[in-house]
Image 1: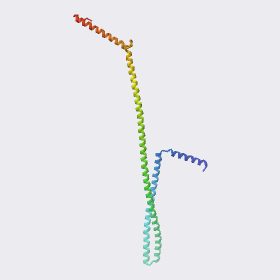
Image 2: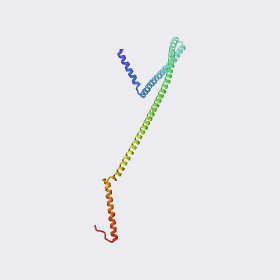
Image 3: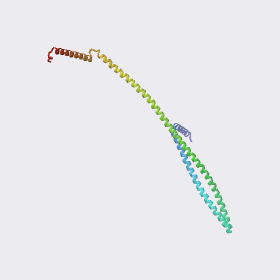
Image 4: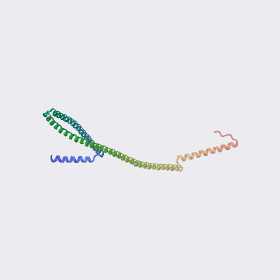
Length: 233
């Protein structure tokens, strides 16, 4: 490998490491769970393969034991017949069958032990995966609760700020209303002191009209008192 390719691979590895370091912890936890589940599936398949092998070895051992019984029975029958050649051949065959049965019995015992160990390992791995999943779910629940608490505190803080702003606006509005009321009252007072104001002129006209009406009322009363008829308009 050239130096340039080595440097490129080193830089790429550093980038990958930096990317993994910046990755979301939840994504990392999910990836770890997926990896554990993949290993669990592999372990289950391995245990199933060993169990199938144990079954096949058991069948072969049973067949070997049955064959050994047949060969030994054939040797015994040959002895009873006095056929030494057939008896020796059957005995040699039984010796081979016995060795095969011993080998299969040993393999069966080993496969049984291996299957038992794998079964226990698979159970432990399943428990570990379930425990990790429960812990991860609990961690997500705690994270959600913490986020909710932060949201509530932010909402309370925002509400307090809004309430303070509303109170300040209310005070400003009240001050403005009082200022307008004071201006209106001041203009009301000034309207009575300005001779040229329409309001003061109207008041004078009303006073003059009241005085004239009062004068006519008094004249009418005097004429009635003297017995004169009312004046024709």
